[in-house]
Image (tube, rainbow, N blue to C red; front, side, top):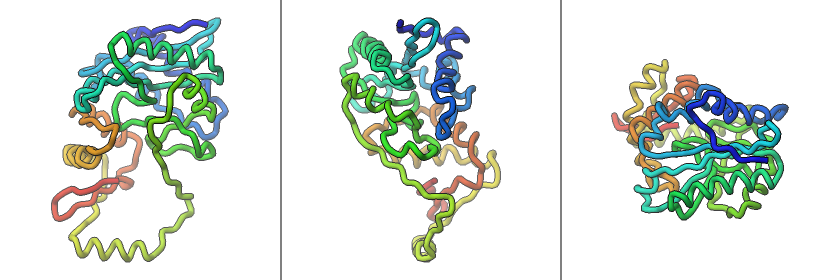
Amino acid sequence: MQTIKLDTARARDVRRFVRFPFDLYRGCAQWVPPLVPGAKAMLDRHKHPFYAHSEADFFLVEQRGRTLGRIAAIHNRRYNQFTGSSEAFFGFFDAVDDTDVSRALFDAALTWARERNLTTIKGPRALIGADASGVLVKGFEHRPALNVPYNHPYYDRLVVDSGLTKDTDHLSGYFAGDHEVPDRVFRIADKVMARRGYRVKVFEDKEEMRAWVPRVREIYRRSFGGNHSFYPPTEAEMEAMADTIIGVTRPGMIKLVLQDDELIGFA
């Protein structure tokens, strides 16, 4: 078994890293595969906006030509400058159910962090703060929603075995497709909207959505500024986040709430 640091300038190395989850989750009904071009873009140091201010390296563990696990070691300088910390992140963690494999992966990430004098490592995190992060520990029977991670149930055990402890919990709610919101909720919402001058903006097409990105960017920063994992994304990172959402959704599913002409919320 060997740990390999990838050369992201080589298409073959990028393909091996991106394709591994497709093999690992083959036959898993709940797993939702990423869009391959988007997954490859994460490793493109010339185009992805993260690399304008920070760095990351990518590792595989292999045995006799078979990939057994992958991980990324991430130094988000913008996050550390904003928070006054010296943390590394790990991300893109996927592995077979084997502690030797997970230990080798985390050893590679920890060694990488120590070489940069980073004192703590947290994760899983993505390159951009708003992308899916964390390890799923409950709810494996559900298919994940946008930006909700999905992984095999043994992942938490592998992470803990490597010496990491839980940082925090994130909770997601679930409504079945036939759920009906009580009429009382609609009546209250109508009264609040009338009293406070709120209105809901619905989009007709994706070009109209793009025109609102600068205003959504500002409300995003104001809304998430107190989040413990927040750092101000760059303009290019916000554009990348918007491209992802606009690319996979229908315009009518995005809602904005305005008070007079001021944007105060989105969903």
